[in-house]
Length: 183
Image 1: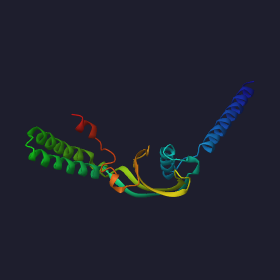
Image 2 (image 1 turned 30 degrees about the vertical axis):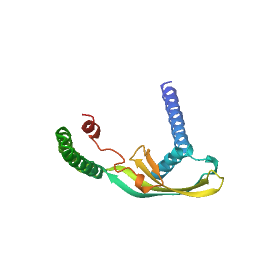
Image 3 (image 1 turned 45 degrees about the vertical axis):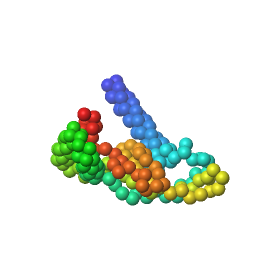
């Protein structure tokens, strides 16, 4: 009797474990892991769909990474902007702004030190994105855009423009940014 009970428990546990592994295999087969490029392409295409005159005419051409922007580059750009603001405040003889901007520059230096190696982590990406779609006249035309995206895991579109001069200088913030500018 004891042997039959142990045997039935063994058979039941084998059945349950096989059934669970089948379910896990089904899940992984139905939900393949997307590559970074697939995630980025999907996000860019989703962002674009409501901006097209004829979304059904859309044809992907290519998506090429042009640049990565690190936290360090963002901090350096903000520091440069603060220095320009200080010069303007000096011309206007606005002592309170000069003090505020100098304090922000000092705090940015502290943030830079505190980030350590993560200072060189990617803050944003710049891509070249080409596609074909019908224009307002119904003609299929090639479109060439610059796309700025956040870093992983979201890869959200921050900016999409055909004009290089309309790219954001600092497309994404850096750790400590909110605290620095919300004071």
